[in-house]
Amino acid sequence: MLGDDLVEGGRVVDLWVDRSEMLFRYLEVEVAGGGRVLLPMNFARVQQRRILVASILGHQFAKVPATRAAEQVTLLEEEKIMAYYGAGTLYATPSRQEPLL
Image 1: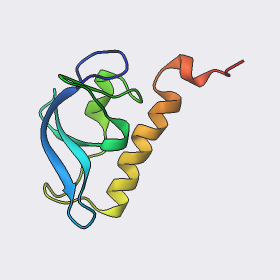
Image 2 (image 1 turned 90 degrees about the vertical axis):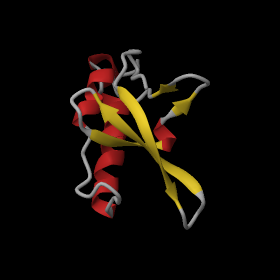
Image 3 (image 1 turned 60 degrees about the vertical axis):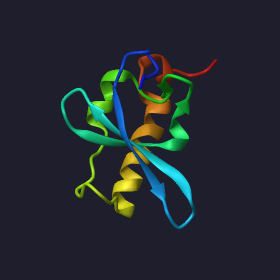
Image 4 (image 1 turned 60 degrees about the horizontal axis):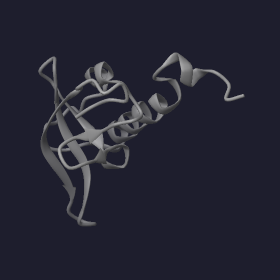
């Protein structure tokens, strides 16, 4: 899995499925530091042999908010995770923080 800088941020180890809606919600990623974090599917661009994440850089995967339990995610944890990736869309690099004009 690659960040916007094309640096590997981790390896996908599991896929979380929303059983009530029958769709993929998260990719579980093992980051370089040894922890596991979640990547929401709407921030992942799945290609044939890799997954691209345009919202954050490769080294920023290590700081994604973690879940307390290994098998479930709470609403508050979901909001924190989504906010992290969403904020990266606007603030991951200094060039993104500048005005567009």
